[in-house]
Amino acid sequence: MVKLSGLIDGMAAALQIEPARVRTAAAQLRKHKLLTTGPRGPGAPDMTPEDATNLLLALMYDGEAAKAHENVARLREATFVRSEGIVRGGERLPSDMLAPNRFLRDTEGNPLPFGYVLDTMLDWWLRGGSIEEEDCEDGGPNLYAAKIRLTVSSPGYRARLFIDAYDVHWQLDYECKPPEQLEYEAAATTEGFDFRPRWDALNGPYMSASRVVGEDNLTAIADCLRGRPWDDLEDLPADPEVEALG
Image (cartoon, rainbow, N blue to C red; front, side):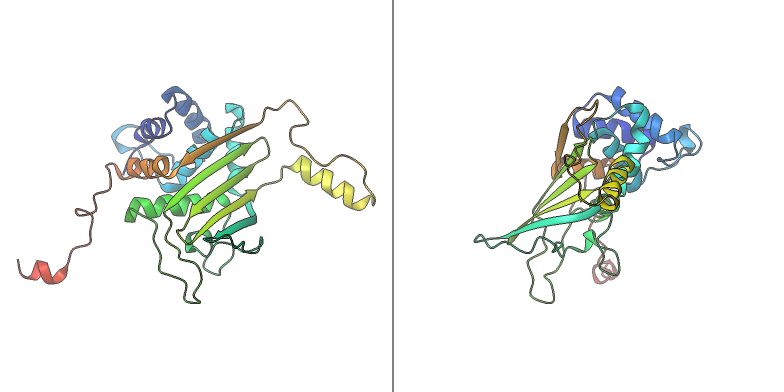
């Protein structure tokens, strides 16, 4: 496993951005306890998938460094709001249907908040080298994720996860509404008819940005956490029968 300094260097390389920017974001997250803390130097704690997710979100969201902790906290809790599944051949699946992959759900089958989905993905790549699952027992779409792409948009605390699962393409949207938006919507509900313009996060001193990273970037971050690239042969579990033969 890697220490914070190694995660900073690995994240900069994976995302192809300046290490100084990563260090600034990491310092802000560490200050607000959003990175694993402990002694510095050789005794520093190992970084976790959660740490990598937090630093990734801080770098993808286009906001002030001083507010990186707020941005990360909100994006981590962004909830599933809709999805679009297109089966090979053009059939569209219901918009409220969540892709069946287990890494998108908790143990009771409920959609996980966005940050926890990223935690699980990075943890799977860290420990298993890939995200693969068996077909659904009910005959649903194949769950093998052939390609994954992540998009984070600001200033609206929105995220989109694209999954190419061979037989079906999934596009899943997550959102965390800021307090100002919740207040606006509550007022519209209690006041009855509302003729105000629809809430728009861009109505203010904000710039619109949308940053995208692909599966290669994400697996590179997992390799950084592991401390080395994944080796399919070296990392296979030992076969007891082969070991017994000496």
